[in-house]
Image (cartoon, rainbow, N blue to C red; front, top):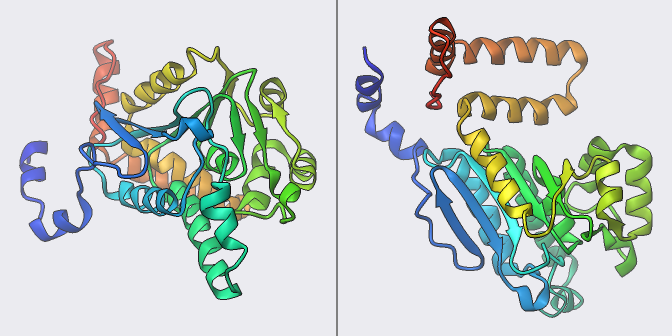
Amino acid sequence: MSETTAHKELDPALAAGNHKLLAGYVAQHFQWQCVDGVATITLNRPERKNPLTFDSYVELRDLFGQLKYAQDVHAVVVTGAGSNFCSGGDVHEIIGPLINLPAPELLMFTRMTGDLVRAMRACPQPIISAIDGVCAGAGAIIAMASDMRLGTARSKTAFLFNRVGLAGCDMGACAILPRIIGQGRASEWLFTGRSIGGEEAERSGFFNRLCDPENVLDAAVALARDLRAGPTFANGMTKTMLHQEWSMSVDQAIEAEAQAQAICMLTQDYKRAYDAFVVKQRPVFQGN
């Protein structure tokens, strides 16, 4: 059976529930552009350093939740308009209103923000944040929840919850940040809420590398395109294993990886790589 025939014979009910086309998605509270399978989300309130609102939180959560079903989006870049990434929750549209809410509604909000991180970690597409300028509060969390981060030397990252009277344990920070930069550094960053310059962020392992401000977005998109050209089904498996193995023993992780790799060996991309190697050509992966 050919690949085309196999795809055409997929039950319509199964396809309807699990295949979505999101490249043409029209965002309401940020910018969305998708070119050749690489999507770029731009937080676009540059006059206020791109803060989040209740509406943008919800839309980001729902969009990342839908990406697990997307057949036409294979990598995602997150950036901010102008010279800043994201200043966190909008002081007037989020922080102020929260002061007057009772506990049940506050818990509704904090669970909703945590669901954004869950959705980012659960979607199979690699997420790359391109960070310049201010990256603070929930903006730092979005960067943290990404798979990779490219930054600039002039950027300032701050998990500043402590500085506004809150705990550093926000949106999974106490679980995820230590795995990126280590327990000691994460403790300092979360207890103090201090601003971290780009060079320190790179030395600490938070940034994968530094770029010039005028090139950071292009570099992130180029990296995303490289991933898009790779075996995208296998990339999704790698992301899933990187996330799930946090809570596994070494023995459990080895067995999980054995099963995951066996599944990847059933893909057409695995066969394409072998066939290309035999004839000394570069494989053209198709994500199946």
